[in-house]
Amino acid sequence: MPQLGHRALPLPQSSPELARTGPRRFPLESYPLGQAFPNFFLGATRSLGYIRKAKKRYRPRGREKVGGQFRNGPPHSGWKRLSNVTSSLKAMTEMPQKTILKGLTLDELRQWVVQQGWERFRADQIFSWLYTKRARSFQEMTDIGKAVRQRLGEIADVGLLPVLKTVTSAETGTVKFLLGLRDGNTVECVYIPEKNRRTVCLSSQVGCPLGCTFCATGQMGFRRNLAAWEILEQLLVVERTIGQKLTNVVFMGMGEPLLNYQEVMRAADLISDERGISISHRKIVISTVGIVGRIRRMAEEERPYRLAISLNAADDDTRTQIMPINRRYKIHELLEAAKYYYEKTRRRVTFEYVLIRGVNDRKRDAERLVQLLRGFPCKINLIPYNETVPEYQRPSLEHVERFSRWLRPLPAPIIVRWSRGRDIRAACGQLWSEGMQERTPSPFASSGETSPA
Image (cartoon, rainbow, N blue to C red; front, side):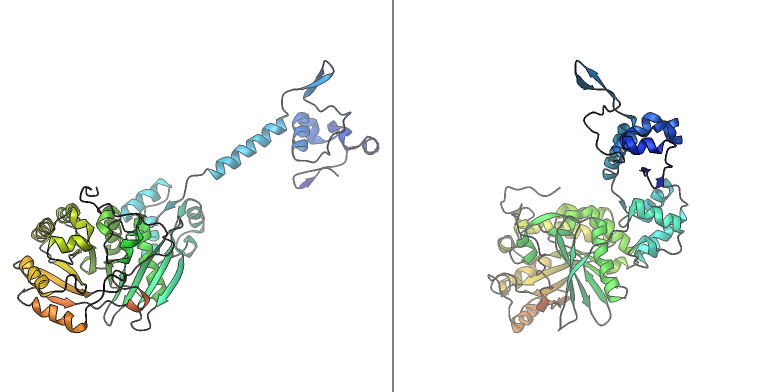
């Protein structure tokens, strides 16, 4: 019995003739559909394969014999319909990408919701589910109507990243996360538990373009900046894993945060938003090697976050040796920018100083540091080097304490920060994302290079 779609068609009245002549020669006019649309019916059934291949003696409709040969006539309407279906399928594969809602501010989310024809309060619901309840899908948003949730799934994306690997330190409980990005790259973030706080160390770039010689990330090369939603997802992955709210955030992972200024500031603004994640801006630290223009921009925009500068040497020769960025921004320029930041914000800058044996841990290095920072309200973090490259070693505990005493003429608070997670290569300067095989040289390797925009 010939069929069209899922419905069986009734046999024609002249079925004995049909049995004798074969399926090609049944009278289409005996079917109700064939009577109404004979041309379409024949073309559609051929295109869908309901009529067996024609015998040589059969001349299909739509062709005519001229000079003893057939020539093509106009295509059947059924083929036109099939062409339309093909075009529709192509259009479906070229549909625009879904909107990733993570990373949008509440005002932006409200605007987007209104554009979809929904009430503004839907944005507040979605915002709360994303950042307060750490939802992984729209179906979890149970106070939103089913129809709206279904539509959200069609046009929007929550913005999730898979956890490829976790490693936990047996010494400190520090956890390192390896996350897979959608373009095939990977990035690391670190959870640091302490007695009275729970800190996450976030990455801002895939790799790093600055090439600091003592840093594992700097030896990876650079692939790209992270989007704000990719930065936020690092934090949310950690909160989902530990089942608790984080108290502190440090942008001290992979990459230079101020070279990804817009996305880092957007992420920090969303982290500190009281309607969402709600971590106090006083507990968010943005660390930089010293991108002078961006430090001044932070001051002019009155960003409320704490600023940490990776100094690591008090003279240009030593700093250039371990930090190629110093070819572009000399120490006196960096210090002027730090003072400008303090004058505009009245917030003290933290200077980080990684102690490397025989490189920057001598008494004359301490004396230069005292001379450089005298009279400037600041804090100093001394960080014993975490072994990453064989050329550099960590000084002994006794020498670290000795260097700290040499800095006592400074009125600034001096703290020795022993990095957690050293045993799992999750400490300061040790992050190295798996999957990074090509190394891109630092753009600051030669003095002729200009600063990033």
